[in-house]
Structure formats: structure tokens, C-alpha cells
Image (cartoon, rainbow, N blue to C red; front, side, top):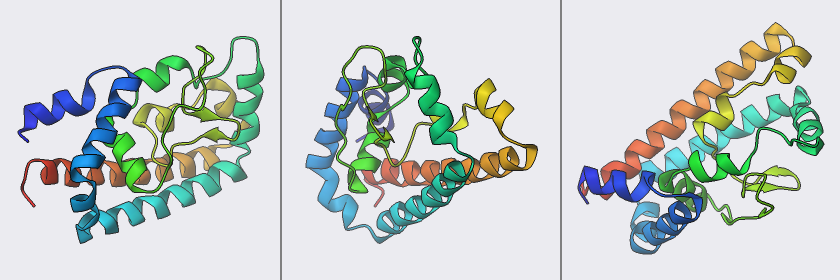
Length: 175
């Protein structure tokens, strides 16, 4: 697959189209991808980094903070726009390869389709979702907590980007 085909396949369309494209990529390339030691190792590495980030976010009570906003009349940050615009087929494919049952779990037309009762179902999240720190999070957290959060977020996003590049190279036939 050439680079422009990868771009149009993986980054164009709404959330439902991108999820369907991720499933198609899995069907055609999934077995081959999971036979690549470097890809499997990077999936594991990203997952480990996500666990460290999640642990820190839990210690900061971000789940409680975000749930309070989500329950408010205008909702929280995890809007329907996020599910449609901030995901791409490669990110969804990475989640599927990591064992996540990627499917819409919310269809109320307000919240992100990947927002379950316990939060986001995605293990690997879009860059916007991880980088966005609302006013409430900044207000309820101290400087050191935020510094650690941003550092751990950067580590996760870098690892996810590295994995994405491995997938692109595989799809280009360089493996």
C-alpha cells in the first residue's frame, strides 16, 4: 500500500468509517502484524506505559473530576465530536491488536461513542484526549502532579507514535 493510500484509508472519514477501515485492515493484515516481533513488543511497551499513566491519573482522582463534568447538563470533554474526529483507523487498529473490543458503546448523540460507564474503552487514546487538561483538572491538581502527568502523557504519545510508524511501514510493505 502506498503512503497516500494509507493516509486516505486511515485518516479520512467519520468515526464509523474509521472503525470499519480498522476492521478491514485487521482482516487483511492482522495475522501478519501480530507475527512481527517488533510490533508485538511495541504493543506491549505502549500498554505498560499506559498503565503507568492510568495509575497516575487515578492517584490524581481524574476519574472523579471527569465524571462530575460528564454528569453536568452540558456534559464533559468526551463529546460525540471527539469520537468522530479524533480517532483514526490506525489508532483503532492498535487498540484491536492489543485486545480491546473496539465498538461504539455510547450512541446518545452527545458523548463520544467510545465513552463507557467506566470511562473511555480505548487503551490507546487520541493525542487530543490525552493532552487536553481542562481548567478544572488544572485547578484541582498541584504543579508536581501536572508535571508528572504531562511527562507520562508525553511518554505514552511518543510510544504510540512509534507504534503507528511501525504499522505504516508494515502496510507499505517494508517488512
